[in-house]
Amino acid sequence: MSANQWSVCPRCRQTAAEEHKAAKKRLTESYGEVDKAEYDRLQRQLENFNEKLPDTLREVWEFQLINGSLNIYYGCTCEACNFKFDFVHEEPVRI
Image 1 (tube, rainbow, N blue to C red):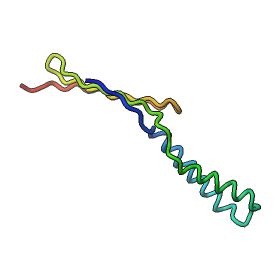
Image 2 (image 1 turned 180 degrees about the horizontal axis):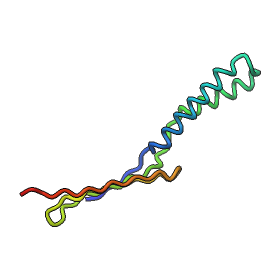
Image 3 (image 1 turned 30 degrees about the vertical axis):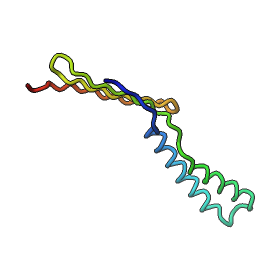
Image 4 (image 1 turned 90 degrees about the vertical axis):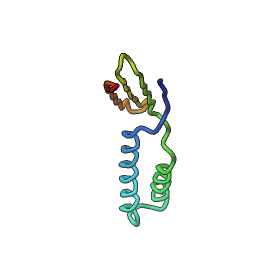
């Protein structure tokens, strides 16, 4: 059996969280230090981080029973940041 799906990449999620934190800090530190137009721009930039992240992580998995062993494979790759992860496991089936 094999399957695949698309989901949010963990690296992209972490990067977005770090960028959101930095943007929030810039907004807080700029209060009273920049003109209204710049403050509004920073505020809009922060609001854009609240948008849902796109599903750029392709996940593929497979389970097979071959010659008395259960073979498990999971792999994923991100189209945006090239994050990649693979997991393979083989377990003998006890009879």
